[in-house]
Length: 206
Image (tube, rainbow, N blue to C red; front, side, top):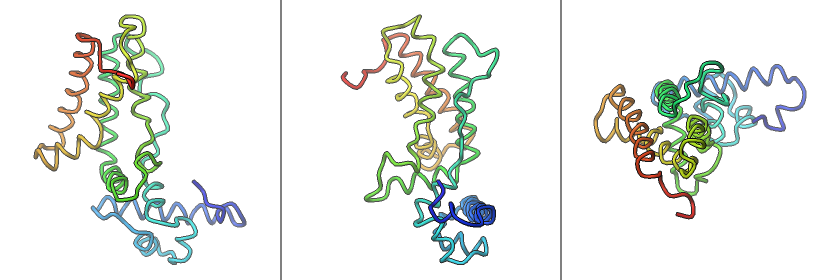
């Protein structure tokens, strides 16, 4: 999100400066560094004072470096499968690819979201896009299994297939990234299979 400073005068130049700072932050993240505003400023050859006009703190910088995945759907525009299991496979395949491709940025966002005083529902990580994608994959259940709370099921699948689970599988369980991705996808399929057999997880009031 642009700051008031960016909305006045020389907007093109300011847009380029912002892009340079974001690019520097992403490059540092790719090296395994969680950059401060000062780190990004130095890497982008921008003064610290100027950098703080764009990003008042580290969280704002990492938020800007977070992947911009604005797709409303991960299903193909034409020829999407009709079976919710096949639809979920498509969504999980793409969602886990995003986790791997943007691992450094997602890890940094996760770290910041867990810091004392951080808002766990803030914009750095908790944007809810994946839940929406999964809900769309599950839409056929409205006809075939109307008693299943599809959003509750989507939340359960997201909990077992997101970056948090990926980090645990790689860092704690010691799986390779390919093994972790395969496990995440299996988790999602298993959640859906269990829901079809038992009626799904409880909703908010369950």
